[in-house]
Length: 100
Image (cartoon, rainbow, N blue to C red; front, side, top):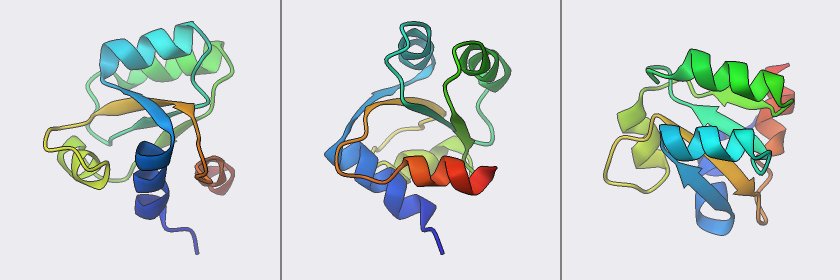
């Protein structure tokens, strides 16, 4: 079984991410994002998903809200979305395969 929380924690710790709506959209538009992660209450999810689809970048809808996603990422603030720029030593792409 895939532990999504552990995978997300690993990618934030070992890889490189851009957190927040503006940085996520920029990473998707620049095509530097490898995957986009969205909380279930992300206010900009439709816009970000449309951009990700347009640029053929996979995305993952996290099952909890931004507070929980922030906690999982080791941040003491709400994280509604983030783009993974460098996956580091994590296996974050595994959650996309699981979603299909």
